Image (tube, rainbow, N blue to C red; front, side, top):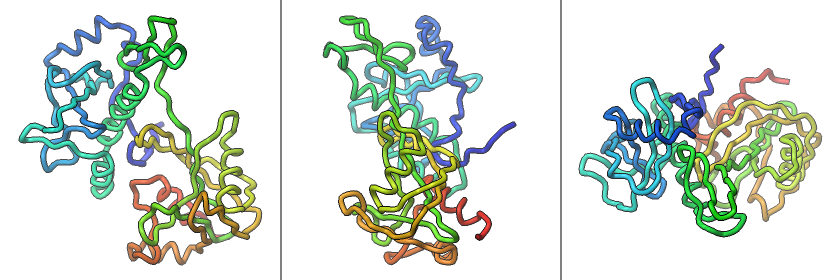
Length: 300
């Protein structure tokens, strides 16, 4: 059975072929193939066809600096991610930030292109931040198609990390709790969220974060969906949860404000688009998916 994930940055379009990652000779042959496609990044921004946020401008292997990341195959083509320190793109291309690419895909329905580009960005970002062994401090090198680094000094292998984040639609009856951070756009309210801590379950992280940020105690927690988030490399774990009380007591060090909203208020802002008094995230973010899931649930 096929499930449509629908969140931007989900639905990776390639077969990752992880069994090839340790076969260096086969990967080298793929890199040298005329059917190889190289996606070029500068400071995390992929090279796209100028004026087209949907289509990467593929380059040659020689345009990439340093090690390449094997992304997978779509049948005929093998795809690799590489980077350049040169900020000037070819005349028919432009380096575009991932949020702009994602917003373009959202505005036009749904696309798997952001997922492809996000994976390359996340792994290249990891290599940039982990060039030295955390065990002994010596320089490490890329291996397994870019999905590991090895330190020859202490024989330690390091693997790309993903930071799990819980994001929750707190509900109580026919109202939901939304908060805003100090950096949000004027009027923006969104789902509460926070990084998981070592040793926590998802449920424990949800209860801790909601209480820390808004002073609300939470009971039942139900998983809805997840979203890769390449800024720089998180996994947003989307849930709905039941509040046990509705007395908001925010921690101003965590969030700027939090409010309860009923379904009529949410329906109105979605219909009207929102303004500086009240707006919600667009469909780029999993927070919007959680909000719509709650809105479409039966009224209590």
